[in-house]
Length: 65
Image (cartoon, rainbow, N blue to C red; front, top):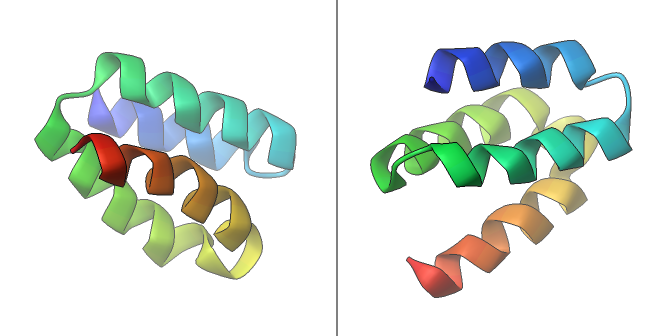
């Protein structure tokens, strides 16, 4: 499922609202360790473009985890 989420994020990365929406949806279907892997991958791939969104979305999960 993680690879599927990565594929979706790559495909919607042209639009910041779609990207954020799909990133949030990923939390509903991934296990905690997969979310950590996704976090690392997202920061590696998208921190130059979507750093604010990544900090917003992953910042919320740090409080829970």
